[in-house]
Length: 166
Image (cartoon, rainbow, N blue to C red; front, side):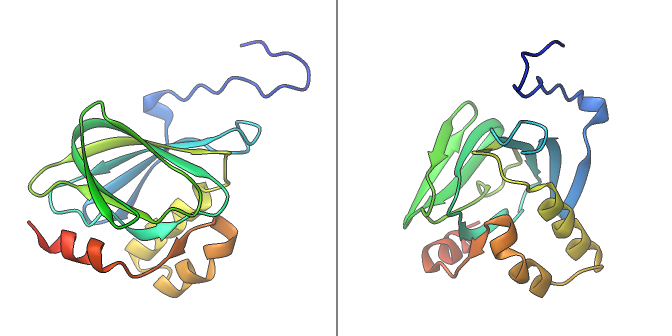
């Protein structure tokens, strides 16, 4: 693929070559394009959730908009203090500083494309999640990385209640 001088090169990731991480017992993250590969334009991954997955806890980002496109199944996403249901083909953007969380709808499996813009160097964050899942790192390591990866976790009673509804 050709490029114009001083412009980032197109990024092609073949499904067979994409790095896939197990970030928990019921979810996978497939790494597609990080900020370094896209000249800072975006970061993208595919998130796959089994039934009963807790998904991502309540958090926010200060530097990037996060976008979600449901590829399969049904998702529920916390946006502020509201739970928004999304089905296959539904798309949602969450601007910086807006609290959010996500998980598959009760009793369903789901798959989503997740994109951040501008891009954030997040692939090492996802690798950290896998190390925590394997017992090679701790939740404190995640907390300690909040500034580096612009992931700021907080308690959400609305999200906690939603996760009890199976």
